[in-house]
Picture (cartoon, rainbow, N blue to C red):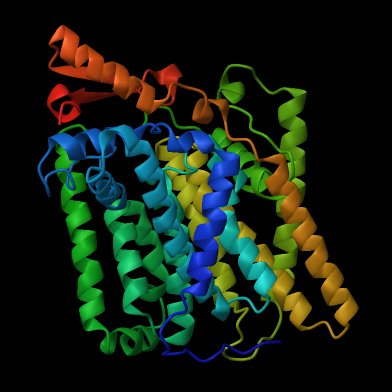
Amino acid sequence: MRILPKLSRRIPRVGPFVAFLSSFLALVVLKIPTSFSNFWAEDGTFYQQALTEAFPRDIFSSGGGYIIFISRVIARIVTLGPISYAPFINEIVVTVVLSFFVFRLYSNLNFLIKSRVFKLIASISVFLLPINNFDVIASSGGLHFQLIFISLVIVLVARETGQISLIDLAIISIAILSDPLALISVTPLILRNRHDAIKFWKSKLSSLVFLGISALIQFIMVMKFHSQDSRTIGDTHSIIKTTYLFLDRVIGSTFIPHWGRVSSDNLLAGGISSQLIVRALIGITTFIVISLFTIVHLRKKLPIKEMHSKETISWLIVLPVLYWLTVGYLFNPEPRYAIFPGLSFLLISLILLDHLSCNERSALKINLLTLLVVVFSVLIWIFSASPSDRRIIGPEWHVQILKGELECNQLNQESVMVRILPVDDDWKVEISCDYLNH
């Protein structure tokens, strides 16, 4: 049993941030070194737009039908460096930004989890969650999917403590300006007892206005992009596929070592195979175990300000499931949409295990439980160490830039096309020869 710790007004320590930054840089080098040598998909597109469009017009350009603020800012920063090393600079900046966000996540988890080991697992999983491997890992275009989870944790802590720092408020604002669906993370501070809501926001009206302006800007731009047909709602809706892929991509991928990935096309083109049935049964079993563990916790009588609160667990279930079902049904249950619910269900499990260890008097049993969680987590990370081939196989940016410089000088071209990853979708970035000759 653990009561919420008191908020500290001391200047945040930089040690954890440096530790996360060093760890993530090392993991990128080991796990996906090609991210330093070429752009991935939208990262290259954002960089091209930042080169050719004036600030702040590039910030308010559509990224799939909405503003992706954090990615645009990173692209603008990358343009300050030499073009030949743009992907390298991009990856460094992305890793620094992600490390800072994870540092704030770790700091907030002090109010939800006692065990430092469990807090580290939850924090590192923002990077090492297996479902990241397909298109989000080491990419500025994927940060906003991770930001939704981090914002929800910040909000849940603010709900329990009644306070929120300016830094965390800025992170939530960035999340909203980067993804309209991030508004779901603010729900716990809005949908609550009227007295509690008034008490919380009474001394934070400026913060409420700040978040409101962020949401309004995103909403206006979404309406503008929608009128320009920048993105439309998908025309194929399947609740069966959405539900199955919840068990597969959210539950199975997060909790089962060496789970791998089954394409959603298998459900439509290949029919119901024995492989799909087995994966569904494993996913259902895992989900039932987590659900039973959660129900037992929710039935307990917990003291006021208990750090493993029922409200926190409930929000971590309801909002991610609602998010997945809505996005999966209206658009498509793609792997990147599993990041927020996957991290949320992982955090639920760690909170429940932490509560179990807090009520256990035997130090030996606590140590064994912690060791089991660590071993299981490491196995999941190891068996998902290799990203998708689409994410790592392709040409190098620097080589193509050198070739482009020769073409500009010898063939008198106005621009050159530089191929980026993934090559199977023929992604390219157009670079003006004026930039290459400077």
